[in-house]
Length: 374
Image (tube, rainbow, N blue to C red; front, side, top):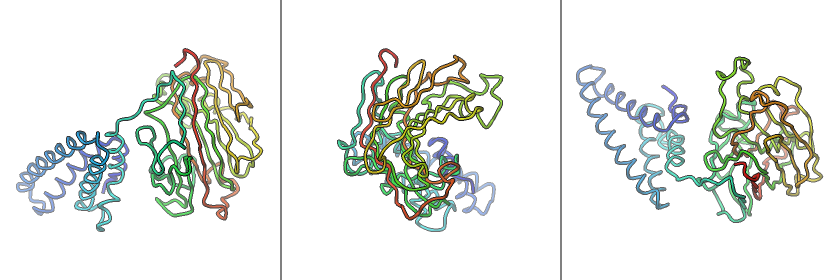
């Protein structure tokens, strides 16, 4: 069987089309014992019927998104429909597949049919979690990772989920909680969220007010990635190292703390050229990051990137060249918050399971634009 969940991660329209065609073909084959003439007729009828059903469903969901309970009903309906496709075409022999087989498609339906809130990066922005509803994050602003794919990049030991066990608003804070449990072939579950599609900025000051988890093996982070990557490998004749291609558009990490380096926050600015050099190690030190909230920030300007703790600059990277391979940061970046467990860095000394579960708590996010820059 092909991997429907992988197709769903590429594009929801692809997933729907593949699911429709696949169920029509398989039902036709099974019903007609692979006889070509009845197969062709049944295939045409099946495609017409399912196409009409999908059209009605899409129109109904689009019409009903203005009303939250109707939207919820639409998502449930879509879950059952695509789950049934999984079940009928052999993805699983268990009825529980009606829900599990459709989860990735439903996530995309929820995302693509929810009108996103676009934050104006020319104006100050404050997101106070104490003013948000208890429970799930607002999907108009936040994307919630629901797979192990991104955790695999650094050989991390967790899978990310969209369950409130791992991602929730509670007691006035956003909680990303890592738990010791088996899922998706991983030993832990955790949370990762981002603002891609709702908030990004070119220049300005961004801060989060956070309390970090305690324990060897933990790896909380707050970082920035390009919202609409500007550069491609084809743009540079010298960009031939495939292990560094991912840095063509840069990455900025303003909170990274691994459990075995107690009280340290290690910032980073990654570009294609910088990754070929010895990494700059300029940690900031926090007296009590595990029991108290502290503000971790980044100041992004045309000529420099500065890293702050509680408003005080402790590290700086200066622009030394206009070459994008050296300085690709002059483009919009969005915010990512995640709690990883283990991996190539945080897992150097294993994981202290006795300290599980772990919570990375964020009380608020604040942004101030650089005048006339965004």
